[in-house]
Length: 628
Image 1 (cartoon, rainbow, N blue to C red):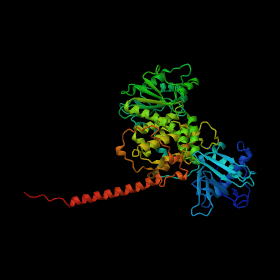
Image 2: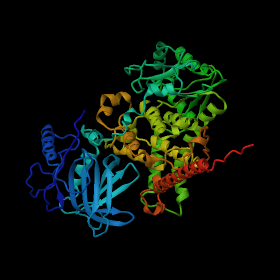
Image 3: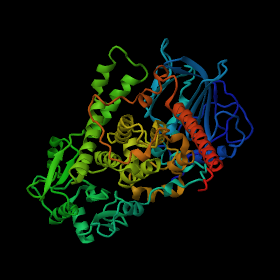
Image 4: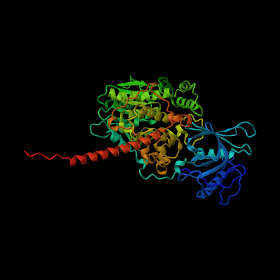
């Protein structure tokens, strides 16, 4: 495990307004600590000296004032006073900035009853830009911090003596630790959540057995052919496959599927045995290669459902993209080769299309919202068009399972982005278990984390390469689609909007280990479970605040088939516009839920009291039988 950079403490005020960390207890004025000669390639001697300084600085971590409030294991690394945060809504705020190994914390020093506070986890920072020049008059001189949660934060510094240098260099190191061979803060976080270990929420074998796998008269079994990750290094060690498929056949199929990602069971209908399986594309290529084992495997999935007349293969890609992949060695299933299949292309854009769409959405949401052209601007982003495509694709999967009683096989190119969106959303529609808080946590662990969605690459945890083309808001779109479903079925979900936003916030924060790593093997190699805390330990320790007070599980055990019409879809203002105080509702949804929960509790207590009084009255007023 790579060493996490820790440094804390502070020294006396320096003439440039900074407070820098000193390795020795006596406090004396000091100049801004200079960065390594090159942030890309620091010399070994300077790196070693800096590590010694960090160790010395960490010793003085105990004598800290109330600002900033520190989490268990969090250490202060940098302080700067007399800095101005340029709030786009409330105007300039003068105060102090505190940078720890987890967050950037700004607190105003202006005379107010309640000081202005800005608390930004470092994991949300996408990149940092210098704005203005030290010798240019009339323009802002400082830093602009771009965040993954759609915020852009501007700070103004004094132009004398390169005042922004210390903050810029410190942020480069602590916000992007992976670029310097360090671990993110999750490895240092030392809080405890005794109620439940979130890492134990999901058990692959138990979940497959819940679906009926390995049961009598169920044509599916559990295989451990990938137990050592030799079959596929991005798949989990435990998989569900048809009974008729041997482990030898599975190994041959892995050779014919991109990245070795074979068709594996995601969900099984308890009555019809209609299944949802997920995989990557077949490697047919321009020569139309074939694999008898792959064809037999697909046919076994088809025959595992006795009620099915067809096996629907849902290819998430636009057809033209799938055909382009053929030229690069990929491909798709042909109904001339695969017996009994019905191939459908769902026309969902790739990760690059989605990244560009989110970038456009950010431009119209923060900081200014242009009222006069809002709808045309929103339409130009195509964000809701993409949400419609993803939700509509999942709806087609659910309809085939529910109405036609047919099995569905889903894939895109590699089977870890659009495939996860479709399978997870369809499972929410079909199975009420995944609409509960614990069930939703299991769903994320199963379809996203264990099946190898590349969280590190898609989010860029701890990396400062802002131009990385592997970044994409795939998981964000999934959560957005779930929120759209909660709008259409407000009584069918146990969790509320606050729960979804909490998940997204910690998708970026790097406070917990849940979303670290690209696959199970990578997490084992980096000891994520042993060294970090699960997000579900945190959420389940205060589960009541995430509950939907209107949840009615007794009347919502049926299949949900939401509308994917653009007329029914809305922009999630509670998330995308939450940083704009002018767009916030007078009463937040979180507060309404809390009040409703209190009211429901009081009503239940009153109902129980009335029932007890009724029983007591009935026992007293028992009529005396008349004698004949």
